[in-house]
Length: 574
Image 1 (tube, rainbow, N blue to C red):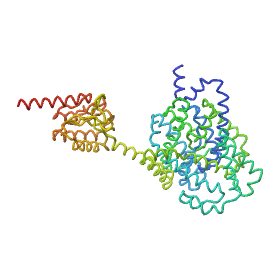
Image 2: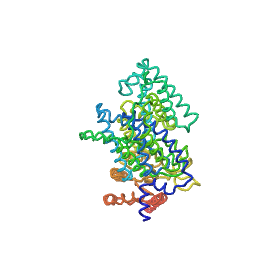
Image 3: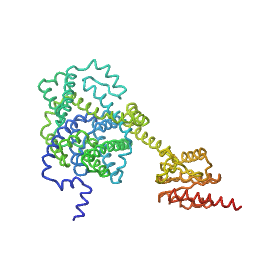
Image 4: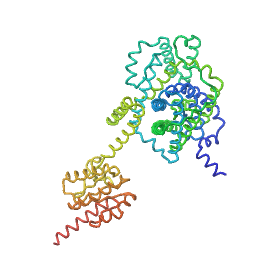
């Protein structure tokens, strides 16, 4: 029975936290849950417009994933739900496929959400939590900066109350400067007032849910001043109760496109979501399980899809509120979901008067929060190359679009990885009096090399894309040496992997040096590397030469010196 209970809590870590629940946590969890609901509801409604769906879909997407994560998540603080970057990706994916058909759009959205959920679960079962590290920080920062600009520019027509022809940021930004003179004055005054209110609440009373304050004040203003009759756009009626299903069968090409877009959503949403989870886990001194988070995010998206919602991820603003209010367990998410369910069933009437301009203000402020100027400044000071990669990613998102921007982000991450591995740091090793061992002569001024031996360290794995550079560097250092080099001893301790191409090239290089009277030896190789060096085809090639393989660099140097002494004795006797 105990084993069964342990297995259940392994797959449902949320149950484990509730199992050891302490009564003194209840008041904090209840307060945090209500506070999260106060933010999640208006944010869900606002982000629904980003995703191009009715407001009630945003409510579904805010409620049901919280219940799923409470069971499957390993973070005690993370709140899940709609996210600005995810929503804009959903719209970019579905708009060209649906061709203006709203029913088709909603049905495709459900399929996209379920595909995303399944991919997450499969990745979790396959223990692929490492994909959170697949996008480098400069690339992720650049991508989110580009998303933020797209979101802000896209909200300008709603904020100022003018008609927009749509299109990308290249069309919308010039349109703003033309149409701003035709802005609706009442809408603009209301939007600016609510924006100032939002910023003041966030600045002076940060524990108060600013988005909910804006929504409530906006409703009061619209109803009290009858702004709906003065040209101010409002949400309109929101259906209460449970969602109605939207299902359809599509051509295979549609499923293929949705599958591709779901993969991009998984990569971006998990990378950003798990960063939030890790950040708050670190603050509260515990660790999350990345593979379990993949399963949890999958459960959240499956729950959202079955509830006719759109893809979700970790929600940083709602997680921050939960942490600030002292939430201790995932009961916070359950309380927040129940509170929003009650509103969905019994109190959707007033939401019809929410001004769209107010929601635009909420979205724009949230988008500004996506900007990471601090990271950009650090990158600029630390590495001009990484700073350039981040800026190029931002420009790529703006020029190519949101979804192609994901591909660009992946390609740039791969290119950056290859550029780092293709020409890694290397060093010539020597000894310094009073310091044990052999070290980089550039790091230890005064260190001396062993005459006749090049002690060389290549600080990377040996792979198909850097083995030629390895050979070039050895050749260069042999030519640069002040005394003739008879042995090259490679310190293999940094090498964890050598692929087939590199191993073949290494053997050929060894034979080339041998024909020139130079021995290529290695020391301190790891067990898996030795297995490659002891493979039959490599051994056959070595039979023409001595087996120059050593456990330590000291042994290699001693073997060289012994050989030189033997040669000297032979020369003298001859």
